[in-house]
Length: 195
Image 1 (cartoon, rainbow, N blue to C red):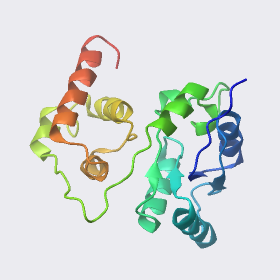
Image 2 (tube, helix red, strand yellow):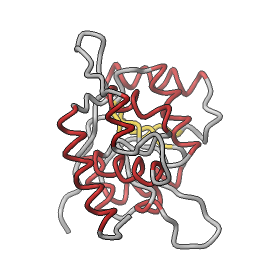
Image 3 (cartoon, helix red, strand yellow):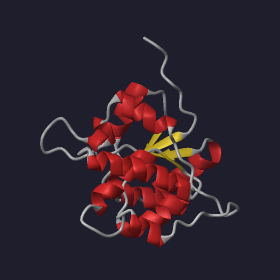
């Protein structure tokens, strides 16, 4: 058996099942938020972890996971982010919810290899024109939700609703060219029936 990859940063996860799953794949330390009712003590621990080793937020690709990600980002704006798609988080047992604990080794390794760091205030942000998002049917139209999900998977920035899309694209410094390239792939997959 090969040695596991060691992760320098402390990974913020939702619960003990996520910790257990990640530690099967990589050598890491985690902070568990114990769901979306994240408290001040946990946020202080995350802040301290960021100062000492850095943190990676790796939450489930669902409403609760996004809520936790938002709370942590407000408290620790420099936190890095790892994302898995909703498809990669599907449980094997019926009735279970989406989660990091259901992801394959490959999905976890790819998410951690593609960790994204949000902008700090010293970097000029790139604004994606709203007209371009409308042109690609990302914020209006019958396929907008599926297209946003496919775009989030392709760019590895997670799923967002229409209101959050501009902010998430800016947060991860996605340029107009990167968006156009990604949407060419998304629209091609959509046309071939992949979406």
